Amino acid sequence: MRVGLPVLALLALAACAPEIPDSAAGVGFDDYAEYTAGREAQLRGEVAVLSPQDLAQADEGSAVAAQTMAALGPAGEAAPQPSARTNNPGISDEQDFSAVTARESIQSDRQRLEAQRQQYRVIEPEPLPGRAAAGGPNIVQYAINAPNAVGQPVYSRPGRVSQDRFLRNCAKYASSDLAQEALLKAGGPQRDRLGVDPDGDGFACYWDPTPFRAALR
Image 1 (tube, rainbow, N blue to C red):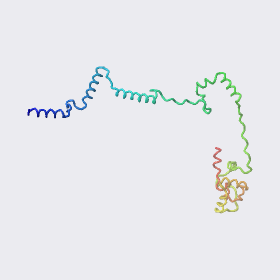
Image 2 (image 1 turned 90 degrees about the vertical axis):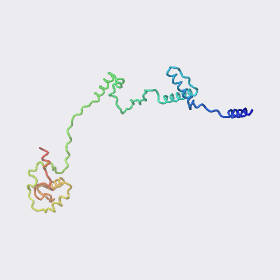
Image 3 (image 1 turned 60 degrees about the vertical axis):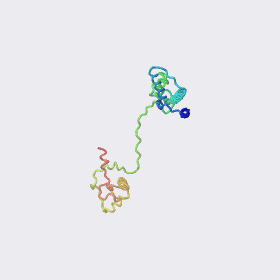
Image 4 (image 1 turned 90 degrees about the horizontal axis):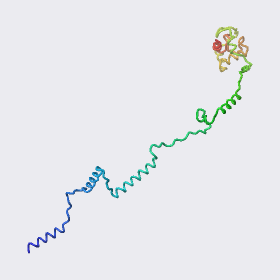
């Protein structure tokens, strides 16, 4: 009787103790077993049975792929190019063979050529208008006909003109051409009333007839 009480106590403690999990199974071994079975089924060509969760994920991926393809358009289809404007009146299409052949014919070409012949006019050359006389001396003609060179005295100058006065007299004119015209208007080159040709060569204020003479050669 004394032996039975301790045994009963041990049995009661064993019934209250929590169940110890099987450590041989390991963590995640059930998932790995499912993966191994599915892999072997694929290798053997068998159809694996998908769970409802896998089917839902596959349907969601297919919907996203379909939306993406619809946004991108069909593969290989190029974007539409803007059509060339052919109704611009500022651009000629005479070099476009298809446009010309569609619009013109042999008869229309013949009519157009005939219209161009009627509009054709021959302009005969006319003589240039004569140069209006300015009423003053022509320094170009004088330069050509002058018998002497620059600095070669030809005309007498009784009254001597100082260099300073000569320079002041020449400063009144914007150029030597204008000074030469003034000399010829005032009775030159025989007379020098303006004091612009003190050496008597007939050329006022260092005016040089050489460029005009060289133009005739």
